[in-house]
Length: 433
Image (cartoon, rainbow, N blue to C red; front, side, top):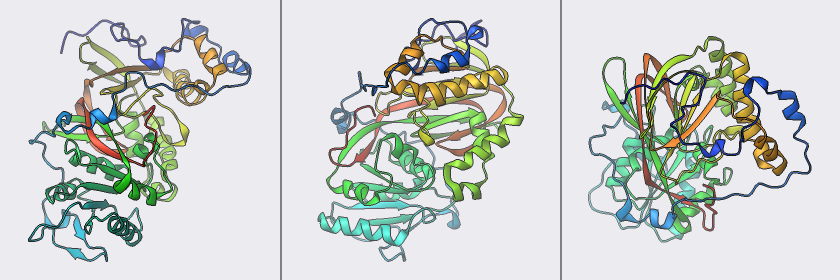
C-alpha cells in the first residue's frame, strides 16, 4: 500500500474519479446550508416522465460468454465445508430417496443437475418439474442434490460438475445461490436460478421472474445466457488465518454485517427480508464509527472513520431500494460504497440518498432536475474499480450476500469479469443489467 493521504474524514478523496451515481449532482449549496424541507417541496416540478436507460460501455454478453474468455477458478481455493459424514449434502433421486454420489458407467448427455435447499422449496414438486422439462427436451434424467447446514451447495455443485453436467439449477436462499455460484465460477457451465427463499437478490437484479419457477426451469432447455461478473473476497481473521469466498450480489464490513448478525433467524423465516428491520433496530443503538484504512487499485491510501464499507456487484435491494442505480453485473468492475455519516443528521443524509434520491427522484425528469441543483454530501461516498483493500484496528463483522462470515481484520476484494454464465428466459432483455 502507498502512503496514507491527508484528506479529512468528512471529505471525498480527491484522487477518486467521480462515480456515475454522483454525476447528476451539480455544485449546489454546501451541506450545512441545505434545507431538506425546501428540497422536498421542489419535487413537484411538473409531471414526471420515465427515465431513459442506457448501458454505455457494457460488454456484449455473447462475446463475454465465449469459452476462450472465461477466467478459471484458482485451484488452491479450499472448499469451506465440513469433511465429516454429517457435513455432506446428499444426492437424491426423483422420488427423494438417497443415491450414491457417483455411479459406474457414464450417462448420456446432455444432462442437468438441480441443487436445492429442502427447507426453502417444495422438493417433490421441483424435482418433478425439472425431470418433466428435461424429458420433453430430450435430455437424460437429471441429477438431484440436497444441501445441508454444513454444505450450502458448493461441494455438491463440484460433484455435479465432475459428473459432466451441461447445466445446473439452484433453488434456495441467497446463501445457497452464492455457494453454488462460487463452485461454478469459471466453469462455463450455465447456471439457472429458480427463485425461492428470502431475498432472491441476484434474481431481482437480473429481473428474473420471481413467482414463476416453471419459467426458469424451462429456460434451462430453450433460454438465453448472460455472462456476469463474480466478486471474490479474501478475509484475514484475528487468529492469523485467511479465507477466500465469492459473492455475486454484495458484501460488506461493519454496520451492515452487524445488522445481519442481529437478525432473528426464526423471524427471517417467518416474514422474510422484513426481519432485517429488526436486526437494524438491534444494531443501530450500539453502532459506533471505526477507523479504516483503504485503497482502491491505482489510487492513494486513505484513512477514514466509517460505519460500513460495501463492495457490490449489484445495486438493488429489497423493497424497491436502489443502493447503486448504475451498478452492472457485466461491467467488469465492483462498486464501492463507504458510509461515513456524522451523527444523527448524517444518517438522514444516508437515508435520503438511498431511499429518496436513488430510489425515487432519479426515476423522473422533474426529480433529476431537483438533484442537479443539490450538492453532493459526504455521508455516502461512491467509487468503482477492480476491487478494494482495507484494514481495521479491531476485527469487524463481515457479510457476503446476506450471510454472516465472522469477523476480519482486513478485507481484500477483486472481480473476475464474465466468470459466471447465468440462464435467462428466451427473449429476456439484458439492457441495464
